[in-house]
Image (tube, rainbow, N blue to C red; front, side, top):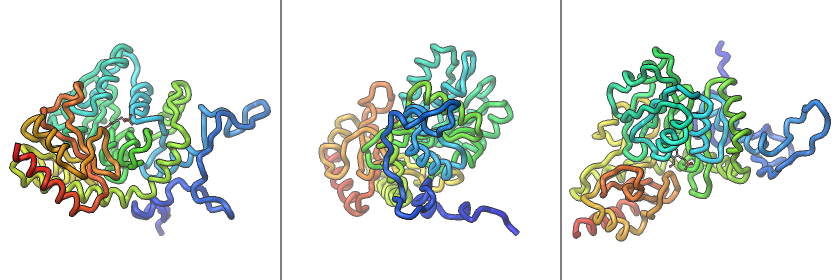
Length: 379
Ligand code: PLP
Protein backbone atom coordinates (compact mmCIF):
# COMPACT_ATOMS: atom_id res chain seq x y z
CA UNK A 1 0.00 0.00 0.00
CA UNK A 2 1.34 3.42 -0.91
CA UNK A 3 1.76 5.87 1.96
CA UNK A 4 2.30 8.84 -0.43
CA UNK A 5 0.48 11.98 0.63
CA UNK A 6 -2.53 12.40 -1.75
CA UNK A 7 -1.76 16.17 -1.84
CA UNK A 8 1.52 15.32 -3.65
CA UNK A 9 -0.42 13.87 -6.58
CA UNK A 10 -2.45 17.01 -7.21
CA UNK A 11 -1.67 18.96 -10.36
CA UNK A 12 -0.27 22.49 -10.26
CA UNK A 13 -3.54 24.22 -11.17
CA UNK A 14 -5.19 22.60 -8.16
CA UNK A 15 -2.33 23.04 -5.69
CA UNK A 16 -1.73 26.66 -6.52
CA UNK A 17 -5.23 27.86 -5.61
CA UNK A 18 -4.93 26.44 -2.08
CA UNK A 19 -1.21 26.63 -1.38
CA UNK A 20 -0.38 28.11 2.02
CA UNK A 21 -3.98 28.66 3.14
CA UNK A 22 -4.58 27.94 6.83
CA UNK A 23 -6.87 25.08 7.84
CA UNK A 24 -10.57 25.88 7.41
CA UNK A 25 -12.07 27.56 10.44
CA UNK A 26 -15.71 28.58 10.87
CA UNK A 27 -16.21 32.23 9.92
CA UNK A 28 -12.57 32.86 8.99
CA UNK A 29 -11.49 34.11 5.53
CA UNK A 30 -9.68 31.70 3.21
CA UNK A 31 -6.56 33.89 3.10
CA UNK A 32 -6.32 36.05 6.24
CA UNK A 33 -5.66 39.72 5.49
CA UNK A 34 -2.19 41.26 5.79
CA UNK A 35 -0.96 41.69 9.35
CA UNK A 36 0.50 45.16 9.86
CA UNK A 37 2.54 44.94 13.02
CA UNK A 38 5.78 46.55 14.10
CA UNK A 39 5.37 44.89 17.48
CA UNK A 40 3.10 42.24 18.98
CA UNK A 41 1.73 41.86 22.51
CA UNK A 42 4.59 40.03 24.14
CA UNK A 43 5.21 39.53 27.82
CA UNK A 44 7.28 37.14 29.94
CA UNK A 45 10.78 35.80 30.10
CA UNK A 46 12.03 33.45 28.62
CA UNK A 47 10.68 34.29 25.15
CA UNK A 48 7.98 31.81 24.19
CA UNK A 49 5.69 33.94 22.04
CA UNK A 50 5.88 33.03 18.31
CA UNK A 51 5.53 36.73 17.38
CA UNK A 52 7.53 39.46 19.08
CA UNK A 53 8.89 42.13 16.75
CA UNK A 54 8.03 42.95 13.11
CA UNK A 55 11.52 42.49 11.66
CA UNK A 56 11.71 38.93 13.06
CA UNK A 57 8.47 37.39 11.81
CA UNK A 58 5.00 38.06 10.45
CA UNK A 59 2.11 35.60 9.99
CA UNK A 60 1.45 36.97 6.47
CA UNK A 61 5.01 35.99 5.48
CA UNK A 62 4.48 32.56 7.01
CA UNK A 63 1.39 31.78 4.87
CA UNK A 64 3.21 32.90 1.71
CA UNK A 65 6.39 31.01 2.54
CA UNK A 66 4.38 27.85 3.23
CA UNK A 67 2.62 28.23 -0.13
CA UNK A 68 5.90 28.56 -2.02
CA UNK A 69 7.57 25.80 0.01
CA UNK A 70 4.82 23.42 -1.09
CA UNK A 71 5.47 24.30 -4.76
CA UNK A 72 9.27 24.52 -4.61
CA UNK A 73 9.76 21.35 -2.54
CA UNK A 74 11.87 22.90 0.24
CA UNK A 75 11.74 25.61 2.92
CA UNK A 76 11.31 29.18 1.61
CA UNK A 77 12.31 32.59 2.95
CA UNK A 78 10.64 35.69 1.44
CA UNK A 79 12.61 38.89 0.87
CA UNK A 80 11.88 42.50 -0.03
CA UNK A 81 12.91 42.01 -3.69
CA UNK A 82 14.68 39.61 -6.02
CA UNK A 83 17.94 41.48 -5.39
CA UNK A 84 17.47 41.09 -1.62
CA UNK A 85 17.03 37.33 -2.22
CA UNK A 86 20.20 37.18 -4.34
CA UNK A 87 22.17 39.16 -1.74
CA UNK A 88 20.96 36.74 0.97
CA UNK A 89 22.09 33.76 -1.10
CA UNK A 90 25.57 35.24 -1.66
CA UNK A 91 25.81 36.46 1.94
CA UNK A 92 24.90 33.11 3.51
CA UNK A 93 26.51 30.62 1.09
CA UNK A 94 29.85 32.42 0.57
CA UNK A 95 32.70 33.61 2.81
CA UNK A 96 35.92 35.50 2.08
CA UNK A 97 38.23 33.40 -0.11
CA UNK A 98 35.36 31.43 -1.78
CA UNK A 99 34.75 31.44 -5.54
CA UNK A 100 31.35 32.15 -7.07
CA UNK A 101 30.74 30.99 -10.66
CA UNK A 102 27.91 32.99 -12.22
CA UNK A 103 26.40 33.71 -15.63
CA UNK A 104 28.18 36.32 -17.75
CA UNK A 105 24.87 36.91 -19.54
CA UNK A 106 22.41 36.86 -16.62
CA UNK A 107 20.53 39.72 -14.96
CA UNK A 108 23.11 42.48 -14.88
CA UNK A 109 22.41 43.90 -11.39
CA UNK A 110 23.27 40.49 -9.93
CA UNK A 111 26.66 40.70 -11.66
CA UNK A 112 27.18 44.26 -10.41
CA UNK A 113 26.40 43.16 -6.84
CA UNK A 114 28.79 40.19 -7.04
CA UNK A 115 31.63 42.10 -8.70
CA UNK A 116 31.14 45.13 -6.48
CA UNK A 117 30.20 44.43 -2.87
CA UNK A 118 30.99 40.70 -2.71
CA UNK A 119 34.30 40.96 -4.60
CA UNK A 120 35.36 43.66 -2.09
CA UNK A 121 34.43 41.25 0.70
CA UNK A 122 36.99 38.75 -0.65
CA UNK A 123 34.83 36.55 -2.94
CA UNK A 124 36.37 35.59 -6.28
CA UNK A 125 33.93 35.93 -9.19
CA UNK A 126 34.17 33.73 -12.27
CA UNK A 127 31.76 34.52 -15.13
CA UNK A 128 30.66 31.84 -17.60
CA UNK A 129 28.20 32.12 -20.49
CA UNK A 130 24.93 30.28 -19.82
CA UNK A 131 25.23 28.26 -23.03
CA UNK A 132 28.94 27.45 -22.49
CA UNK A 133 29.16 23.70 -23.18
CA UNK A 134 32.11 23.20 -20.80
CA UNK A 135 30.66 25.13 -17.83
CA UNK A 136 31.40 22.07 -15.65
CA UNK A 137 35.13 22.55 -16.23
CA UNK A 138 34.88 26.07 -14.82
CA UNK A 139 33.85 24.73 -11.41
CA UNK A 140 37.29 23.79 -10.10
CA UNK A 141 37.80 25.17 -6.58
CA UNK A 142 34.43 26.97 -6.56
CA UNK A 143 32.00 27.11 -3.62
CA UNK A 144 28.79 28.13 -5.40
CA UNK A 145 27.53 27.90 -8.99
CA UNK A 146 24.71 30.31 -9.82
CA UNK A 147 22.69 29.45 -12.93
CA UNK A 148 20.05 31.59 -14.57
CA UNK A 149 18.12 29.53 -17.07
CA UNK A 150 16.58 30.83 -19.25
CA UNK A 151 18.97 33.76 -18.92
CA UNK A 152 17.70 37.32 -18.87
CA UNK A 153 17.67 38.89 -21.43
CA UNK A 154 19.32 36.55 -23.98
CA UNK A 155 17.19 33.45 -23.11
CA UNK A 156 19.98 30.92 -23.35
CA UNK A 157 19.43 27.69 -21.43
CA UNK A 158 21.73 25.29 -19.61
CA UNK A 159 21.16 21.74 -18.42
CA UNK A 160 20.51 22.06 -14.66
CA UNK A 161 20.66 18.33 -13.82
CA UNK A 162 23.92 17.82 -15.77
CA UNK A 163 25.55 20.82 -14.10
CA UNK A 164 24.35 19.66 -10.67
CA UNK A 165 26.07 16.29 -11.32
CA UNK A 166 29.30 18.03 -12.36
CA UNK A 167 29.09 20.35 -9.34
CA UNK A 168 28.44 17.48 -6.87
CA UNK A 169 31.63 15.73 -8.00
CA UNK A 170 33.58 18.82 -7.02
CA UNK A 171 31.61 19.65 -3.85
CA UNK A 172 30.15 22.83 -5.36
CA UNK A 173 26.70 24.11 -4.32
CA UNK A 174 24.23 24.99 -7.10
CA UNK A 175 21.65 27.80 -7.06
CA UNK A 176 19.22 28.59 -9.88
CA UNK A 177 17.68 32.01 -10.49
CA UNK A 178 14.26 30.76 -11.59
CA UNK A 179 12.65 34.16 -12.17
CA UNK A 180 11.74 33.81 -15.85
CA UNK A 181 9.91 30.45 -15.75
CA UNK A 182 8.63 30.64 -12.11
CA UNK A 183 8.24 27.53 -9.97
CA UNK A 184 5.36 26.34 -12.18
CA UNK A 185 7.62 26.34 -15.25
CA UNK A 186 10.73 24.75 -13.75
CA UNK A 187 11.55 23.15 -10.38
CA UNK A 188 15.27 23.56 -9.64
CA UNK A 189 15.22 21.64 -6.34
CA UNK A 190 13.66 18.61 -8.06
CA UNK A 191 16.48 18.82 -10.65
CA UNK A 192 19.01 18.56 -7.81
CA UNK A 193 19.88 22.23 -7.14
CA UNK A 194 20.60 23.31 -3.55
CA UNK A 195 18.79 26.64 -3.92
CA UNK A 196 16.01 28.01 -6.11
CA UNK A 197 15.51 31.75 -5.99
CA UNK A 198 13.35 34.23 -7.85
CA UNK A 199 12.26 37.78 -8.21
CA UNK A 200 8.55 37.40 -7.38
CA UNK A 201 8.18 40.92 -8.75
CA UNK A 202 7.79 39.26 -12.18
CA UNK A 203 5.38 36.55 -13.35
CA UNK A 204 4.91 34.93 -9.95
CA UNK A 205 2.97 37.94 -8.64
CA UNK A 206 2.25 39.03 -12.21
CA UNK A 207 0.47 42.37 -11.90
CA UNK A 208 3.42 44.79 -11.95
CA UNK A 209 2.28 46.32 -8.66
CA UNK A 210 4.94 45.17 -6.18
CA UNK A 211 8.55 44.08 -5.59
CA UNK A 212 9.32 40.82 -3.80
CA UNK A 213 11.71 37.85 -3.89
CA UNK A 214 12.30 34.48 -2.27
CA UNK A 215 14.92 31.78 -1.78
CA UNK A 216 14.02 28.09 -1.46
CA UNK A 217 16.62 25.70 -0.08
CA UNK A 218 17.02 22.05 0.89
CA UNK A 219 17.58 21.95 4.62
CA UNK A 220 16.89 23.55 7.97
CA UNK A 221 20.45 24.86 8.32
CA UNK A 222 20.41 26.87 5.06
CA UNK A 223 16.88 28.04 5.88
CA UNK A 224 17.97 29.29 9.31
CA UNK A 225 20.97 31.13 7.85
CA UNK A 226 18.72 32.88 5.32
CA UNK A 227 16.26 33.88 8.08
CA UNK A 228 19.05 35.22 10.26
CA UNK A 229 20.41 37.19 7.29
CA UNK A 230 16.96 38.70 6.66
CA UNK A 231 16.49 39.61 10.30
CA UNK A 232 19.92 41.17 10.70
CA UNK A 233 20.10 42.93 7.31
CA UNK A 234 16.46 44.03 7.59
CA UNK A 235 15.71 42.96 4.00
CA UNK A 236 12.14 42.13 5.00
CA UNK A 237 9.14 42.19 2.67
CA UNK A 238 6.13 44.41 3.41
CA UNK A 239 3.03 42.48 4.55
CA UNK A 240 0.82 44.16 1.92
CA UNK A 241 3.15 43.08 -0.90
CA UNK A 242 3.35 39.53 0.45
CA UNK A 243 -0.41 39.30 0.78
CA UNK A 244 -0.97 40.60 -2.75
CA UNK A 245 1.57 38.10 -4.11
CA UNK A 246 -0.10 35.24 -2.23
CA UNK A 247 -3.50 36.25 -3.58
CA UNK A 248 -2.02 36.47 -7.10
CA UNK A 249 -0.39 33.06 -6.78
CA UNK A 250 -3.84 31.46 -7.03
CA UNK A 251 -4.10 32.60 -10.67
CA UNK A 252 -0.47 31.81 -11.63
CA UNK A 253 -1.38 28.63 -13.50
CA UNK A 254 -4.05 30.26 -15.67
CA UNK A 255 -1.98 33.40 -16.23
CA UNK A 256 1.03 31.36 -17.31
CA UNK A 257 -1.07 29.23 -19.60
CA UNK A 258 -2.18 32.30 -21.58
CA UNK A 259 1.14 34.14 -21.36
CA UNK A 260 3.23 31.18 -22.51
CA UNK A 261 0.81 30.42 -25.38
CA UNK A 262 0.98 34.10 -26.41
CA UNK A 263 4.79 34.07 -26.14
CA UNK A 264 5.03 31.03 -28.43
CA UNK A 265 2.61 32.54 -30.96
CA UNK A 266 4.59 35.80 -30.94
CA UNK A 267 7.91 33.95 -31.31
CA UNK A 268 6.48 32.06 -34.31
CA UNK A 269 5.27 35.28 -35.91
CA UNK A 270 8.62 37.02 -35.33
CA UNK A 271 10.53 34.04 -36.76
CA UNK A 272 8.57 34.42 -40.02
CA UNK A 273 9.22 38.15 -40.46
CA UNK A 274 12.16 39.37 -42.53
CA UNK A 275 12.46 42.58 -40.41
CA UNK A 276 13.50 40.37 -37.48
CA UNK A 277 17.16 39.35 -37.56
CA UNK A 278 17.02 36.82 -34.72
CA UNK A 279 14.41 35.43 -32.28
CA UNK A 280 15.01 33.52 -29.05
CA UNK A 281 12.30 31.62 -27.20
CA UNK A 282 13.10 28.28 -25.55
CA UNK A 283 9.64 26.99 -26.48
CA UNK A 284 10.21 27.51 -30.19
CA UNK A 285 11.10 24.10 -31.72
CA UNK A 286 13.75 25.73 -33.96
CA UNK A 287 15.45 27.45 -30.99
CA UNK A 288 18.94 26.12 -30.23
CA UNK A 289 17.96 25.72 -26.54
CA UNK A 290 14.68 23.89 -27.17
CA UNK A 291 15.89 20.31 -26.63
CA UNK A 292 17.40 21.07 -23.19
CA UNK A 293 14.51 23.37 -22.26
CA UNK A 294 12.00 20.61 -23.03
CA UNK A 295 13.77 18.19 -20.73
CA UNK A 296 13.68 20.46 -17.68
CA UNK A 297 10.84 22.96 -18.18
CA UNK A 298 7.11 22.28 -18.06
CA UNK A 299 6.41 25.77 -19.47
CA UNK A 300 8.75 28.03 -21.37
CA UNK A 301 7.83 31.34 -19.75
CA UNK A 302 6.43 34.64 -21.01
CA UNK A 303 9.66 36.24 -22.29
CA UNK A 304 10.71 36.34 -25.95
CA UNK A 305 13.75 38.22 -27.22
CA UNK A 306 14.41 39.39 -30.76
CA UNK A 307 16.63 41.69 -32.73
CA UNK A 308 15.73 44.41 -35.21
CA UNK A 309 18.26 46.07 -37.52
CA UNK A 310 19.05 49.14 -35.41
CA UNK A 311 18.04 51.38 -32.52
CA UNK A 312 15.90 53.40 -34.96
CA UNK A 313 14.02 50.25 -36.00
CA UNK A 314 13.44 49.33 -32.34
CA UNK A 315 12.20 52.82 -31.51
CA UNK A 316 9.83 52.70 -34.46
CA UNK A 317 8.52 49.39 -33.12
CA UNK A 318 7.51 51.07 -29.85
CA UNK A 319 6.01 54.10 -31.61
CA UNK A 320 3.74 51.95 -33.76
CA UNK A 321 2.59 49.20 -31.41
CA UNK A 322 -0.74 49.82 -29.70
CA UNK A 323 -0.67 46.80 -27.40
CA UNK A 324 2.99 46.46 -26.42
CA UNK A 325 3.75 48.95 -23.63
CA UNK A 326 7.33 50.12 -23.35
CA UNK A 327 8.50 49.29 -19.83
CA UNK A 328 11.34 47.53 -18.08
CA UNK A 329 10.73 44.30 -16.10
CA UNK A 330 8.57 41.40 -17.33
CA UNK A 331 5.97 38.83 -16.33
CA UNK A 332 2.96 41.13 -16.10
CA UNK A 333 -0.58 40.45 -17.32
CA UNK A 334 0.03 43.27 -19.85
CA UNK A 335 2.40 42.77 -22.77
CA UNK A 336 5.51 44.91 -22.29
CA UNK A 337 8.88 45.24 -24.00
CA UNK A 338 12.00 47.34 -24.02
CA UNK A 339 15.11 48.02 -26.06
CA UNK A 340 17.54 46.48 -23.66
CA UNK A 341 20.66 48.40 -24.76
CA UNK A 342 19.22 51.53 -23.14
CA UNK A 343 20.69 50.09 -19.91
CA UNK A 344 24.41 50.75 -20.27
CA UNK A 345 25.40 47.82 -18.04
CA UNK A 346 23.50 45.26 -20.10
CA UNK A 347 25.52 44.76 -23.28
CA UNK A 348 23.03 43.95 -26.06
CA UNK A 349 22.90 44.84 -29.77
CA UNK A 350 21.21 48.26 -30.34
CA UNK A 351 18.10 46.75 -31.98
CA UNK A 352 17.65 43.98 -29.33
CA UNK A 353 14.18 43.90 -27.73
CA UNK A 354 13.06 41.83 -24.72
CA UNK A 355 9.30 41.29 -24.87
CA UNK A 356 7.09 39.83 -22.16
CA UNK A 357 3.81 38.37 -23.39
CA UNK A 358 0.76 39.25 -21.30
CA UNK A 359 -2.72 37.78 -21.04
CA UNK A 360 -4.35 39.70 -23.92
CA UNK A 361 -6.32 37.92 -26.62
CA UNK A 362 -3.77 36.24 -28.91
CA UNK A 363 -5.46 37.37 -32.14
CA UNK A 364 -5.31 41.03 -31.04
CA UNK A 365 -1.65 40.74 -30.08
CA UNK A 366 -0.64 39.06 -33.34
CA UNK A 367 -2.57 41.61 -35.43
CA UNK A 368 -0.92 44.46 -33.54
CA UNK A 369 2.55 42.96 -33.97
CA UNK A 370 1.98 42.39 -37.69
CA UNK A 371 0.98 46.02 -38.30
CA UNK A 372 3.88 47.18 -36.09
CA UNK A 373 6.44 45.16 -38.07
CA UNK A 374 4.91 46.42 -41.33
CA UNK A 375 5.62 49.94 -40.05
CA UNK A 376 9.16 48.91 -39.02
CA UNK A 377 9.80 47.58 -42.52
CA UNK A 378 8.91 50.97 -44.03
CA UNK A 379 11.83 52.70 -42.25
N1 PLP B 1 16.80 37.95 -11.21
C1 PLP B 1 16.36 38.19 -12.46
C2 PLP B 1 16.53 37.13 -13.50
C3 PLP B 1 15.78 39.42 -12.80
O1 PLP B 1 15.36 39.64 -14.05
C4 PLP B 1 15.64 40.40 -11.78
C5 PLP B 1 15.03 41.71 -12.09
O2 PLP B 1 14.79 42.05 -13.23
C6 PLP B 1 16.11 40.13 -10.50
C7 PLP B 1 16.67 38.89 -10.24
C8 PLP B 1 15.99 41.15 -9.41
O3 PLP B 1 14.68 41.24 -8.99
P1 PLP B 1 14.03 42.55 -8.29
O4 PLP B 1 13.92 43.60 -9.34
O5 PLP B 1 12.73 42.03 -7.76
O6 PLP B 1 14.97 42.97 -7.21
